[in-house]
Length: 541
Image (cartoon, rainbow, N blue to C red; front, side, top):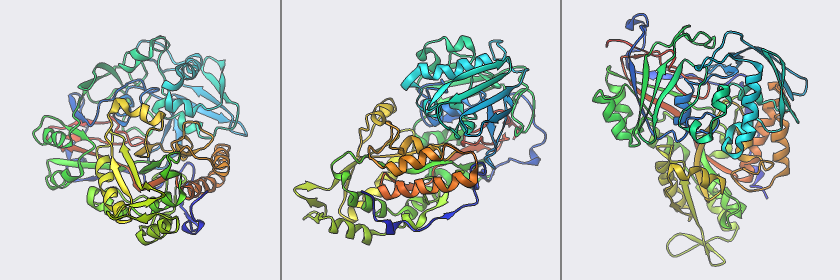
């Protein structure tokens, strides 16, 4: 059963289509990035504060933002994606062709690429990498989704490979530009999953992993002879920096303190309460970028008794004040959610009317469904108290604060929200077992197929546990075409159905926010909002 269709007016389709992202650029305030810094210079060590432990440095196994922040500069991909336009571009593959139904993709590889252990890039190596994902099985969470229906890779010749699928898989082009399908050397692929998680591998990127101390630090060093950066890079040849030293500092205020005391040069996930301090002085800069993908929101487990009631899901959707979350926690740096997808995602449509804060309508829905207000203000029905438990991805620094604000809003409509804390090591188990009522999370991917993993009823790993044959069909159909004029309306329909089913409660768009010393030059982002270290250099200040 779906929520009331009256809550879902016709959406305005944005100008963004499949390969044209909307407004994905970064913004910077204060600091010294600009022509006054002079021409780039090589050398130096960048000290970077990570907000959490990467857990695993194998790009196929490690899906955390902090893990991919490290590995993006170590591991190259077949294709690249322009962060401004969303267009797919060459990288390790010079060109490619897609067959008529998007079930076969032929890549023509560069012939000058080498890995840090000396191996050359070949079609056989591409085959080994994609075949290895199936061998990893559930450990390869994201790449396993990207290769759904994978039938194999044909080695046409030394530098030509054709990847085939059992069914249309239009999202694969963007997937081939992601870190999750980045390429490792043959010798690396023979290592155990545990060894790969510790960074014991060779790849073709401009940096190599020197060391990893779990929960403490990671160090990457410049590789000599790198000469195949994607065309959007600001320079060619070797990276400017000698090395990047990452320190794991989970407490946001400590990261900020380390930046202002000159113990760090850059910090990730700037606490929003510290933004005014960093924006006020010329010695610092704040650089942010909207994250494409699923907006930050509550994944709803409909298999839980209370959440099996569509009226409760409807009340949760209408009963949270998104604008207040945005202004209170993010100083409007992260806008309120306007759809299931964030506005910087290709295929986004404006569904903000369906997400308008309407506590009166939420109250009416619960009244009509027989949930009566108890003596303490919390509703009950048939002896059952209207209590739901929420947890959050611990890698999202502001997750608990979002839940606390939602907790206040829900109390006003008679819903008791309790908050549960989990640790990073527990994360995959909690998600895999669907061990939650509500789970606050966002997922970054610059392709609308990000909806399929979390919400397709055809995916056994979906996050809601519900059924909807129409939604499953639409999400499958959007995988059949690379034509944005056909795909975008399907993506819009899928989001309408997800909201109508109450499978998620979008709250606020996710945003990547870096704080940096003014001496750090050339900060930029790749398409999934990970910083690019290849072009960064240090001025004297």
